[in-house]
Length: 477
Ligand code: BGP
Image (tube, rainbow, N blue to C red; front, side):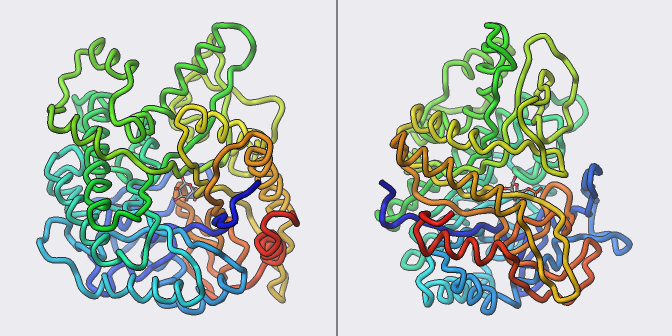
């Protein structure tokens, strides 16, 4: 049986929907210097803001000025919770100041008040891909231990300020994306890090990972002191990796590849480094800055729940080396191969609802903590007629199949799931491409890839469908 308080919701990230990138005293963040890419073309990180280039996150969907009407619409949809992040550089514009920016704090006060007025629970990620640019440029991001201190200060400021308004928190969004060390975008957005010539990306990754895990643990410890009722989770991207066949070599290849998915949550949840990681540090001769005090903090600052995104699955085959390192779908898995049993979206993301049940079971067996599906969804090009009707049947089909898989995991497998927040419930700017045409929402935003459009919101067919799912608590799918 599902819990009474199941958190049906919708998910966002500050930089992908707020806009107002330089308003209210906000400083630039690492995503503010990222140009738009396109279908199959990566985004570029520019040195500074180049007036001749287009930065899609600067205006995004202008939630900054639409928050009241947007929240009203989401209340009509029936959301029980609203997942977003706090833009770190709204609170600390450069990141290393001693005093926060009051105007930035006020913006989130107003947003939380508006949500609470409608009985919608905020679910807040502290860092969703957008460290203040100054910390990346001046300190080298999370390569530098000092940034742990800045993050802790930011976390404490948010916890203190919003302690009566927000109960559910997560520290770092999809912290494990950067395990794909071949993709500079993830290092940059997750951690404000650039790998320099002569550096071993894997060694950089583990040092950065340690500082972030430490920062997360420190935040958890501080948060519990500020309000013992807080529930503070981690957030990982979970793409399960299947063996291509029952050949034991394929089984082992998948098992080893899955460490990419488990490394971060293993530490977040258990409070110590897993044996396979320690062996890897030894084997490669990595001398990491990990102190005894740090290890004690990791042990103390373990999380209350696991938030995760689920979009797709992947497959590995032991005897393949396709060097397919830049493909986000395969996430730095040189032995990945297509799954012949499932179809993919227009962006090549395999669609695998059963993989969600599989994921819920694997995570629950391994960690025995409540799980929160804080992202899931179908990025697609929507067809819009002259009256702005959008018949998004494929989206309804994707979401309903995934919700069914989740309900099976809850009802038949006994997995403890706290809630479900589909990604970009109002269309937002795509993270990987910066495009607008890759839409996830049940609410359409009239804005195109170049930033043109009225910014008006329109309900898609999926709006009414999801409204019924929520009001029936999942009985009507
Ligand atoms: C996750 C991110 C989100 C979001 C989502 C969809 O990795 O946490 O920020 O954007 O993926 O990705 P995209 O927007 O590239 O389709």
